[in-house]
Image 1 (tube, rainbow, N blue to C red):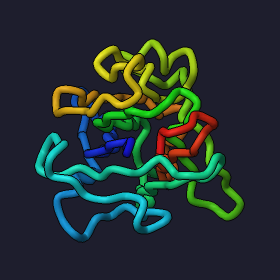
Image 2: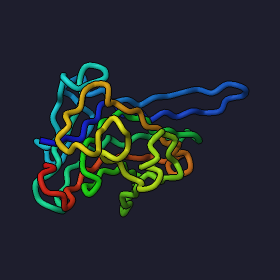
Image 3: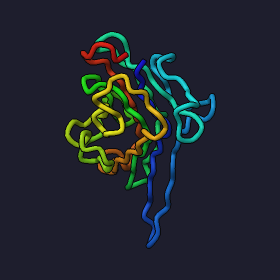
Length: 188
């Protein structure tokens, strides 16, 4: 069974203060049963201690039916006092390039819509993400695109960084990691 693995999400914010900057970090490590993220559907994301960076990882199944999706949704973070904001997470994304995995955000107001985190905000190392704006087995050589059944190991973890200051500075914001089943047979 193929899975998208996700372990730690951190929103880093800095406040310029004279010649120094204060740094505040909101982090989820999935190391407790009181995970701050909402999973939808509930049983689609599980905790794992085998593939992990710091104790546990949350991982999600690619859904069975084309077009179906699963989501991992953060709590609302209050960034209203911060002019600089960075999203950082570690993941392994061993899925087909026809399946869809994206990182999205929305501001906390009535009627707000989910938006994909912009390719222009990306500060990570994946040239495939820079082209497509999403993650898949094409994102890194270690994820072995040519071998659909290759099993991940702990050396496959990648850290991603987005400078989301232009999108969410001075706002209350929430993030969503979404996996949507594409048309490739056998990837669930």
